[in-house]
Each structure stands twice: as structure tokens, then as C-alpha cells.
Length: 479
Ligand code: NAD
Image (cartoon, rainbow, N blue to C red; front, side):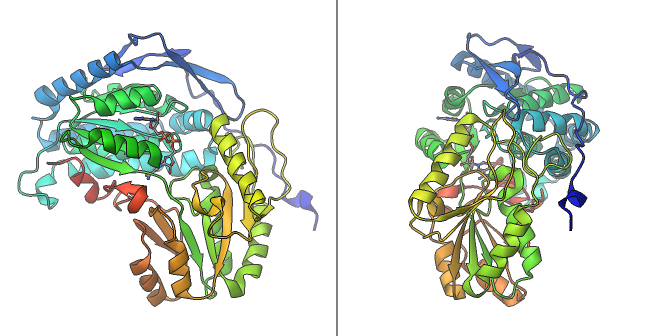
């Protein structure tokens, strides 16, 4: 059959809908203000290396201004406001996100590098759903199982990573606001633009000034925020190393803390699994969002008797993945978010080869400019290899095999992380048996990377503590 049959014409989404300013200040107290410092950073499009905008790196003084604005808003307006009134603002924000969804999706893809198909069909709809979901809780907190009159904590300092910029913002801001807290949020330095557009949405929703403050910057700004004495609650999503530093700095201060950290999930395929569905789940598990996913199924554990057949089918499927322009609606795998992340993926992949695993990628032409990495699978991986132990945070799958369910559990749990896991089998009893024994916050059965605002998400062990999403997510923002 001719390959031509399956070629796709370019189908780029227009970027005209987004209006990116040349420079951005900080969003504090409902206003755009200049930073007190001189430090600025260029946010670039990782698919083209084009400079998109310059954003300020907030100083400790800026952080103090933002926390003060959040405190005033908490004391005077948001804390005393009845839940049913707060809900109206959250519903309004949710509807504005839906109204402006195309703009948000295009901007997210430009700033982050993720395919428009994902930002349009996954990220942004989930962001809106999160605000709708927590809007629904705002006037029902006394029925949520946290006592008859649960109280907010006060000011939340929130720091998020670059892999799901807007979705992580929603996971942080929606429950905090629903519970009556005010927030100061810092997006990651490589992906600040959708958080800054969200600031505009807060204004459009007439959210009282100071309830949401967005300050941009890198690790130094994040540190100043989590260490600020006026912050009552710290919510962090990012790497385990930084999470450890934050845990140390917050210890003994009385601040409430939740940490959502790294992962090295096992996706376990048994010999009775529906193989074509499992292949889709494996692909979705590791190549969704270029593998920049904390709960990515980066370790495939496959039962030995079907390993060869499954790998053949997986490779055939991988050869159909289209890597390229994130704004093209046919793209499956977009750009790696930054040069630094690309270096890390390359370094770990090289270590995989050096340690003796076998590397394979389908033939695939990568664009010349920008940061790209072909979908990659390593076979012959041993549990001791770095690629089996360390989080790669890229489109790289490590394959290990097992013979018995007990061995699958032992291998799956042989990691300091514990964020997620997947099980593929047609037996319901085996799913339950596995789910009871897997040390992971989320266990997916015959699916992977499925998210819903009503279900809690969070880690075991070095993947962090606390839960975001669902009723559990309210507990992180209530006394
Ligand atoms: P990172 O820890 O380097 O950075 C995360 C955020 O923390 C950024 O905003 C950064 O500026 C800030 N930061 C850096 N140093 C800081 C410090 N000392 N104090 C306060 N803030 C600081 O992580 P990253 O590379 O941006 O993100 C990737 C990591 O995030 C991966 O390990 C991934 O697994 C994890 N992640 C986890 C979840 C989850 O829900 N568990 C979700 C997404 C990403």
C-alpha cells in the first residue's frame, strides 16, 4: 500500500487570535505593575526559538507587595464573602475560559510547545472544568466532611511547573478561591504567558483586586514566595529536589504544605490485555505532551510471553506519530519545552545506550530550528539502569518484562516515586489485586493519563503529599 495515502496536508491553526505584548509587568492588587528590579527574561517559542515577550523576574520586594495585596483582599473582601457569592466569580471565570478557549489553547501551544490538539482538547477544557467543579463546592463547604464551619487558611503561595502551565494554575487557584483563600501564584519561567492572560480573565470577571496575584520569575522568586512570612499555605508542583528544599524551609513555620512532585510510573501489560488498546494506552502514557508529564507511563512492564508481539505493534504505531509544528492540528508530538530540558533528555538517553539498553526510534524528520526529540523506546532495560530509575520527562519509554503478577508488583514498586500506574488486563479481579498492591496515588485500569476534576490526584513517597482535585482537594485549603 502506498505511504502517500496516509500523508497529511498541513493544517495549521492561526495564531492571529492571540495578542502577545512585547513586555509584561506583574499582576498585583488587580493592576499591572512594574517590577522594582531590572531583571527580565525572554519567553520563547520552543518550536521556533522566536522571542515571544519579555517578562519581569519579581524581586523579594515585589513578592512582599503581592502577598500584602493578597492579605488585604483576604481580610476585607474574599475571606468574609459568603461562599455562594464566591461561587459566582468562579463560574464567571470558568465561562470566560470557555469563551476564550481558542485563544488560551493557541497561546499555550506557542509558549509551551505542546500540540494544539492537546491544548485545545485536553488542557483548556480541563481548566474550565476545574473552575466549574470548584465553583460548585464554594457554597457547600460545610457539607464536604471538614466539620460544620470549615475556615480558609488565608494567603496561599503557589508555584507551578511548565508542563501544563494553565492546568496547573487551575488545580491551584480554583480550590483555593472556592475555600475563601486569596493567592499569589508564580508560573514557571519558560511558560508564563497563559498565566498572564488568566490575570486578564480575572479582571474581565471583575474579581476583586488582590484575590489573584500573578508574579513571574524563576527559582529565586519562587523561594521568596514560599519563604514569605505572610503566606499561610504553600502549594508546590515541580521537581522532587526543589520540593525537598521547600519542605525544609517550611518546616516549623506553621504553614500548611502540599507537594506534587516527580514520577516514574509503571504501565503494566498482562498477557490477556487487549493489545491494540494497550498500545494506544502506552503511546498516550509516554508521548502525550512530549512525555513532559509527572504521571507519564515511562516504564512499560510487559508480561514476557507477549513482549515481542506488543513491541512489534508498538513500533508500528510509533512510526505513525507525527512530530512537528505544535500549531498543526495533525501534530501528535510537539517541541521539547526548553534547550535545558532537551539536554537532560539527550543525556539520559545516552546513559541508556551506554549502560547497554537497546535504543529505537521510528524514522522521523525533525525541524531544524527549535527543540525536538524523536519518540524513543529502550528495550533490554534493567532495573538498575538510570533510564529505569530517573524521571526523564521526555518522549522516552523504557521497557522491562515480568513473568508473574508478584514480579510485576515488585518491579512496579521498585522506585522512590509513587504518583501513578497503569494496569492492562481483561480480568477485573486482577485489576483490584494490582491496585491494592501498587504504591501509587493514581492507578488507571485499561486506560492511562485520564483526568477529571472530581478525582483526587497526588503522590506516595518521593512523589509528594497532599491531594489536588475532588473533595480531597478542598482539604488542602481549609483549616
Ligand atoms: P522545578 O522544580 O525546577 O520548577 C518548578 C517551579 O518551581 C518553577 O516555577 C520554578 O521556577 C520554581 N522553583 C525553582 N526553584 C525553586 C525554589 N528553590 N523555591 C521555590 N520555587 C522554585 O520543576 P520543573 O522542571 O519546572 O517541572 C518538572 C517537574 O515537575 C517534574 O519533576 C515533574 O514530575 C513535576 N511535576 C509534578 C506534577 C504533579 O502533579 N506531581 C505535575 C507537573 C509536574
